[in-house]
Length: 115
Image (tube, rainbow, N blue to C red):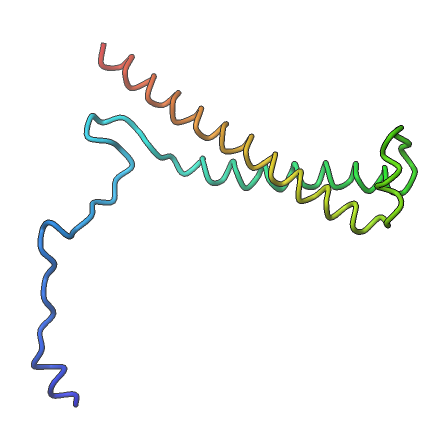
């Protein structure tokens, strides 16, 4: 069995099937920056903690908000979890938008350098 494996040589992939790993488009503009992912994760965590804490305070009754009595009908745990989930979604979106803005700013710097 081992002899068969040694006899078979690895075939090199054709040039058409090889994908380049690049962060730039053919014109040289940046299309991805690692900060996009990190800002989305940080935004999701911070947004989740803040909104989860606010939801916990409302459900506990420490912060009375008219019209949110349904939130305190359950318990603090489910309200805090729901707040964390909603805050994570919103914070992740804001973080990714900040990352996209950073990519656009890098592209503007590159264009100014060419002129």
